[in-house]
Each structure stands twice: as structure tokens, then as C-alpha cells.
Image 1 (cartoon, one colour):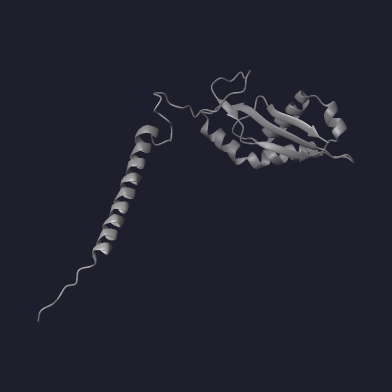
Image 2: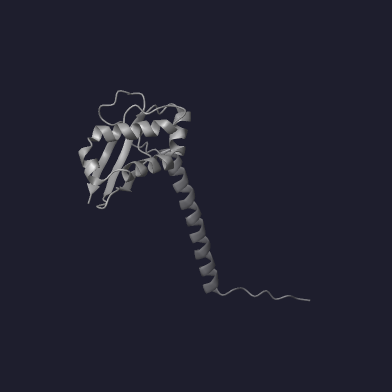
Length: 169
């Protein structure tokens, strides 16, 4: 028995070769991009093309005594409502220096971000707008610092900074 093999049309053969070429081009681009990222950016994603290495250490606020650590800004921006008949919104961002080399304390701070935010909201909810305007920033910072330190077990906060502190009526 003789078997006759039909050849695909010339158009289908060209289409097949073009598609195979596109697949190989995509594989080449993916591998090339991966190698480029590993060589020039490194495993941590740091840009090394300029010859230097980017620092991953947090920026310290001006005037801190502790020059061995960074500034903890993980609490973020907080919006709290004041007490009284004329309730207002307080917007603030809290930061404080901490020893960034102390891994256990850093982890405790990160784990207590929700509690820090709750303490701050409760603090401002206890005062009216007039009482807050009469209080100096230093007194507010000291009150919050003491409340934050009351929930910390592995370290303490020495100073508190407000990046933002606004009372919106």
C-alpha cells in the first residue's frame, strides 16, 4: 500500500515559521530582561548603574540625638475627630527616632501601628477644638509619647515629631 502525504500549503508554512519566530523573540526578551535586572539592579532592586548603592536606611528628622537609627514613620497620616458641639478634624503625621538595628523593637513597632493610630484618635476625641488650640504642640507630643510608651515592651520612644498637624473646622 502506498501512502500519499499531503504537504501543507505554502501560506500556512510561512505563518507557522513567523509564529515560531515570535515565540523565540518573546523568550529571548524575557530572558534578556531578567538578566539585565539581576546584573544592573541586583537582587534587592537597587540601581547600581551609577556606581553607588542606594541606602535603605530611613531618613532621620532634623535635630535627633540618636544618630544610629532612623525615623519610624509607619503610623502614617491620621485623621481624628475632636469632642464637643463644634467637632473638628485633626490631621497629623507622627514620626519618632528609633534604633533601626534593633530588629525586635522594629518588629514590635510595626506590629503596634494599629494601636498607635487608635491611641491617637482616642486622644484627640477627648478634647474640644478650643482645648486643643490652647494646648501647645509640645504638650500634645509629650502626652502621645507617654501613651505610646505605655504599650511598648521592648524599647521606648524618646522624642515625637509631627510632620503635619492641622485642625480643620
